[in-house]
Image 1 (cartoon, helix red, strand yellow):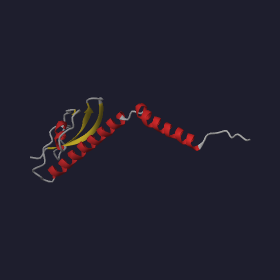
Image 2 (cartoon, one colour; image 1 turned 60 degrees about the horizontal axis):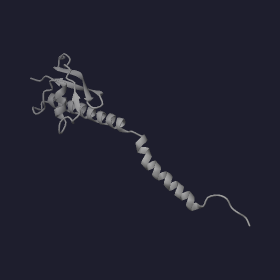
Image 3 (tube, helix red, strand yellow; image 1 turned 180 degrees about the horizontal axis):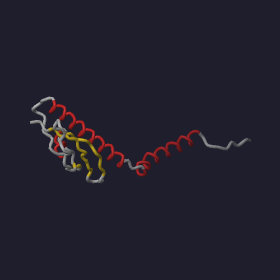
Image 4 (cartoon, one colour; image 1 turned 90 degrees about the horizontal axis):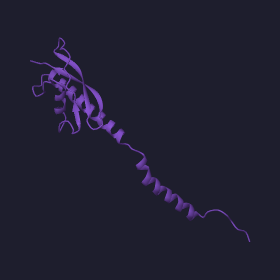
Length: 129
């Protein structure tokens, strides 16, 4: 009589299932993606602020009276629908000196208050009489 050694197919499948369940439960505890999520959220808000300031500049330069005069970095938060999200602040830097066309660029800083991460964006001041 010959004895065969090894595992049956059912035993192998059960081991794979158990390993799959353990990895599904344990892996999220070891991998923390919150830092990446904060970076992505910060980049998204900065992109929105930069785009909103640029659109406002274009509208104001085109003579649209509904466009706002941008006097400081904090005002760019009002350009976003719903305003600046909670937990974020914009540093109030003074704008650079106006050039001959009455415009000035400035580097504004958006900060995430909980993680102290920050990102820069450019706002354009338009001084149209």
